Length: 137
Image (tube, rainbow, N blue to C red):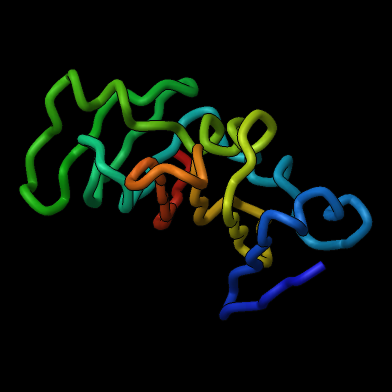
């Protein structure tokens, strides 16, 4: 099992997920420890899709209610807002999809980045997310 400590982040390669229950490190379940209402910054990168960029996200009662494109300083269109996940939705995907890489904040266990690669033989189907500035409201 390979683990790498990077600053305050703990990164789990795919092989480590199946063995994480044997260690004291954060597990995928730890990434779902969010409040029902919070704000965070989502940086979505890699892959060929509409949701790419850096966004300020507001979650109220576990639902995304507002998303601002930080590069433009404007709200995103409703059609794109539907593609913006909550932190819990991203963490939930860890139980149904095998991430290529996942990282948690070392002290809180909060999910801070994940990269999914749905088909290792396909080009540009990856999804990369970085989570920062989490703040319960």
